[in-house]
Image (cartoon, rainbow, N blue to C red; front, side, top):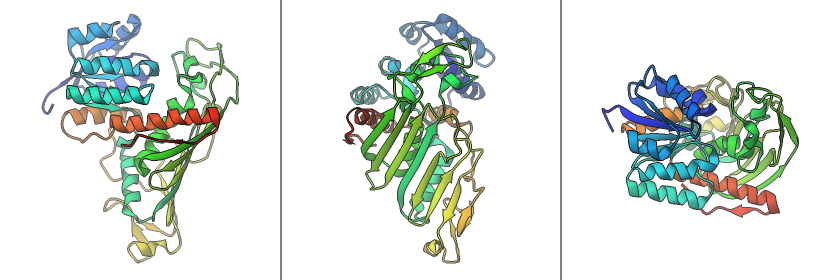
Length: 387
């Protein structure tokens, strides 16, 4: 839709909307007007409308999705509802001929994801899905580095997304109980970021095996209106997943809501000629990756004791650790989660090609689902999807 101001709507007006989606939409008001905010709790929808009034004064609050779609007829919808509702809400929006960006996971089953992909194709609309990892400049740059072959061939990835979960977040304003139950859990909520990054960098997975355990059976909420309430943990809060990629590489992922703190890298890729290590803040690009070049490996590149990495002009590697290297411009317009907003609007404007495809989200969903099946019976599972 080049040259037009998109009419967008929000479905699900809770904590995620206010912290991660409304700020970039307000910042991009020149290209997107919010025309509707919908939530089962009318007061939540009205709160969202009030938050965007300065840039979208015509926004209307709704507590029924069908009424919003019929009355304001948005061009695009951001589906920020709880995970069990994602497929139902997305399907209704696609049926109305509306482009959709859905929070993760895309659906509750691979069959539901298949149906959504078919519905989007039939309606001729765009369906994208979080996480926005693959659309960040850092991950796209790291893919360039890996594909260049200057560090050799990738063989192993080790990743983690670990903490104590939203019950320990002072800034969290919702009810975190669902995050510690079988409907969500640490893999679906946070480990899924690493799965999107790993598959964006190394390609599809062909086999998965996993183990899980409940390490801390009860939690006390520390912040928000429910502070002091006790939660019973009913799903594994430690999950270890082992991955075999279609290209032959191996991977390991820790997803946890029972890690008080960690100084371990949140992602490391090991290649035949070196390693890539990401430490520090996993939710921004404030801490750039470090690259290690094996002795003698530089000869595979420029032949001068140094080897270029990624796009021209970024810099060169010397043997040993190389720190402080950053992706070439342009920098991302928003932090990780908000990057999905900018990418979605740019795709609808014809400025970017879709990266956060529904097919990729479906593949990651299958990894998650098969991982939990493996936890239940101890057997590895073969994947059927790709992207």
